[in-house]
Length: 164
Ligand SMILES: [Zn+2]
Image (cartoon, rainbow, N blue to C red):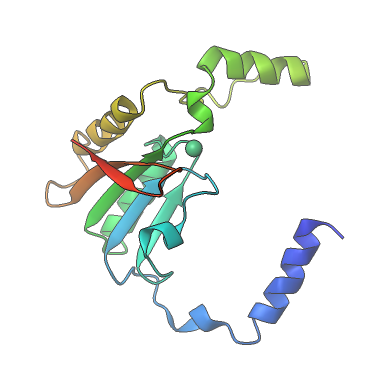
């Protein structure tokens, strides 16, 4: 039995009560969080419930075409008014470089590929958060009334630190 099979079984049990059925697709606390897919960070670490916020995740917590697309949908269609960008210490993307990733995967597969064009590896976490904030704040479709703040989440202490 694979983990996916276990998940299918767990879902069947969940569906007997389906507790999230009563929720609307609009986050109750009008918050969207863009963060990394890292296991050490979740709605639990942010004191959030499923109904509260959109959680948009990718490797690193990077503003890409796609996460930007999700944030725009979150604001314009589903009413969120605050965007929180969270990167974290000990992120896999800090322990590598763009070229190293590309070479590693290319050696493993024996072939090159056009996509993804970037992995968004980074060295300085504060600088990386500021860069994501800058991409959002400078985007013509992200209104000034949206409150955008950036953070580093420390996976050792479990604490958020705001990036100015
Ligand atoms: Zn990460």
